[in-house]
View (cartoon, rainbow, N blue to C red):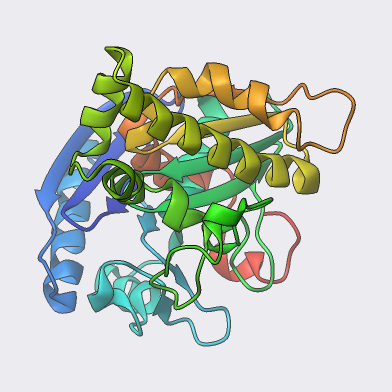
Length: 311
């Protein structure tokens, strides 16, 4: 059996997978908001519950927001801010009395989709999260790619490629820079872009629905979004040339993206042909926790990855 836990801002999800990837048990609990100690306790209790269901002692793979600094082992860049600056992996290993494997939640999403998801069998898979924020991960031959800085796949905090005059200098980002891809492609920023253009405050789902029903202003908003997504992904294709790009997060449910974005990125990819496929996730919002479970099966070890080009 494989056990994974996905630590989210509002929920902590645990899963048991058998060796073929079939779900044997799943449970969700609320995340103790802003309380680091209570979060450790909740993870430990959920892990015990999973072991009870399995009837055996099991190692743990965990997906987290943000990532651990390779220099200090302390968490950084997590939107669950109580994690930042904390030695999460060391604290959990001490509490659980066993080693664990830990990776960023976007990496876990990517691993899940590369192992037995939409990217199954593909040599290079780039996983993309487009939801409340943006994130990404890279898998090569079913194994996560990691570098010495533990930031592989963090495409959301690069500037939007080939910006138009109306896109400069770009919106401010929480990372204290301007014009990051995240500020153009996350769900909240899609809604903000529509409001700036129309004065109407709608969420992403409402904008998509209006566009489907022929609303011209909503259609214009989605066309701007598709252009930006195509340019952002074209820069990824130019650098790592993936066989498959899998979209995750709330905006991955927008069907038109899979038709329009590959057509639009042709203009920006430095090749006479582009065979990269853009696909929806096979496992939906379960990919993160599934990928956490796969961390042990695929040999991922965050500490070793700092010294190895692939893990």
